[in-house]
Image (spheres, rainbow, N blue to C red):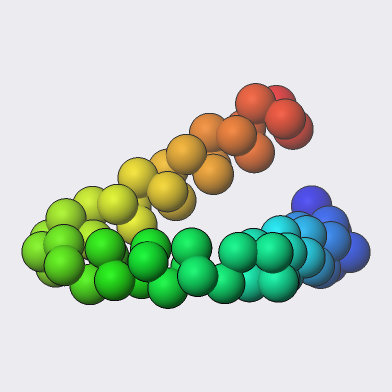
Length: 63
């Protein structure tokens, strides 16, 4: 994995996040409110699950 690959990945995340904010800003607000209501431990577990899912996806795509 090169620095270009990392930069490409970051750019793609920014594009996707920007599209969500541009196309559905009210949905983002509702999602943030729902996340705020979740207990801290559940939010932490959700973050870890997201990281593991991303790692598995990278492994499948580049493995």
